[in-house]
Length: 311
Image (cartoon, rainbow, N blue to C red; front, side, top):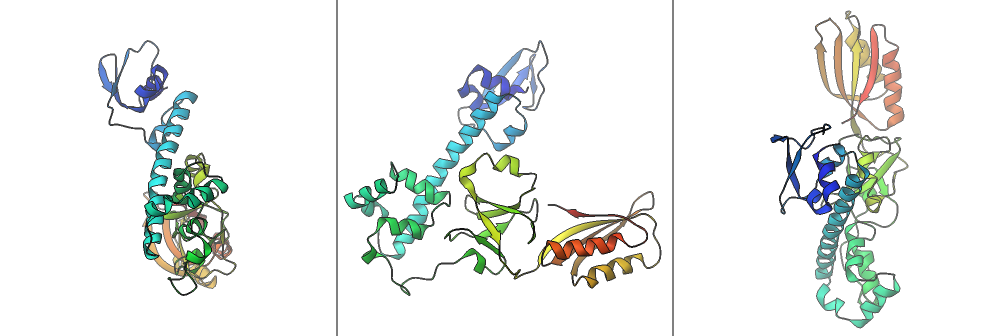
């Protein structure tokens, strides 16, 4: 266990405001592993709060549970604020005010009929990305007050964005970006997560960061690849050459070109023991194309290994 575990064991409030610790009179980092017989003093600050990084340090279920709950509550507060901001912005385009609309008894009844106990629950749904601003407004306003076709700019769909090839399942108008930690390709199984202020982040289903993200299921969103890839995706591969020989790099380049893949960048290095450690940044359309090229490279005499680099 670490000092954070100890702090939560004393009291939740002490754990939530923990900023440091002393063990046997000397300052120790929060990652310090407590030893039997240690005398621990927790340093706290009411302005300090947990971070996701704490989940990598704590060992006890109590500490882990309290941290997750705090982060979830904090993100809900932020999502309420974000949802209100998004609705306000959309309503201003229609010449309306959110505060005025909420004063209507008809709107209050409408929210109740849709299962929202409070306006904040409704705002959070928008902030989490479970409901787009336009869908939300359609629940608040009578049909005759909704914009007609051509009165406002058409809704942008994720699949229409020039740098993406992903569709959000359901009607959403959020920006989509690919997570750099795993750089998913068409053909990879993917998962989407709502990120505050940055739209939907798309991860590979085997991304190492998913364990940290999946506990907050409210931010998960179903995504799928478009049927036909529209753009090239950059991906890095590492090729290890056991014995350098004339023409081997040309052979690797030819194998890549034969798969109709462009090499955007190449980093050629030689290790102290004489092996070649080569990194190629490729522009591919999908996973199948990448696997084809990697398979061809593995067949080249002198190549010891080929792997896809994540992140």
